[in-house]
Length: 430
Image (tube, rainbow, N blue to C red):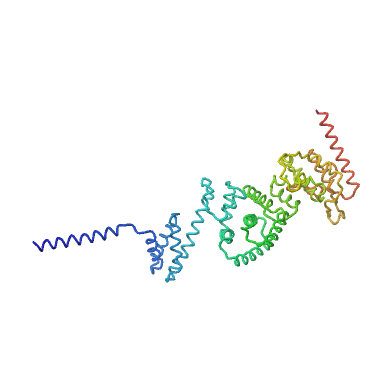
């Protein structure tokens, strides 16, 4: 009986131990422990085991809450004694970063996903410049997809680099950007967008020294004002986004070029409101250079009747005072009529050498052609024989000139007759 009792006690104790072990085994392992187990398998001699471990860990990164823990563990694996583990951890880290980036790009392209929740470097800054509608979202997705690494460096370098590293990086980067400005193909919209975007960032975020920023900005200004350089978007969505990007770049770089260059760029890229503001600003100052006057008259004529919306320009305000909040009228006809007495030469254009003639375009010539156009009269009917259309400035300013003063006088006289005849007809019609 005593023997039987002793065996019973021994059985009960043994069962308790087994149950206790099973209970411990049944408890879930901490996430770090599971990750550590699978990470160790990355160094296995069996390819299938290594592949399964890679797949399990990569799938684990789909969970936003566990991704940071996983990447920390894999980061530690970069210092593992096993070379294979180190290599596999590096591959996994690259795959996880790419997968995370692809996810954010997909979210950015998804119109139903809140743009404010997209976590892509530079998106906040880009959307602040051009907006966050579907066009800008899709445009930035293409931009980031192509230049992810460069944008990451552009946004993060300032916060992470040592001062000496920053200075060296800035000098090399800016020299490269300034030298490449003229070599970017006009059809490479994404490359031009990156350049403009980088130069639109606040000064404390730009990857440049003060001296080189000025050089880069001046070269951008020169390229944008030249029809053969600068981006030439063809798709409607690209045209819209580039217009907003150029508009903000111009507003932030008013010191990089003169008003005439800025106006040409604004007209070229359909920055309509800014172009109207610049036209009014130039035309309010008769003393501005004749070439500026010519550009402003043609731009204003092309933009009419929207000019009346704009407030008084700087010439109407005392220096240092607050902007005038009261809209002032802007009578384009009155300005054009006042320029008919301006005989300064705006352009001299050499015709085909065999014709041995040079056209001299005066400010008054541009004013007269603009007056005719506003009355729907073809200037060629008055004698502007060399007239050529312009893709964004109505007429090519240099084509509005004449070979001699006699031809000019005849054309202006004919133009006045046409205008007066039209006025008489309108009065009689009333």
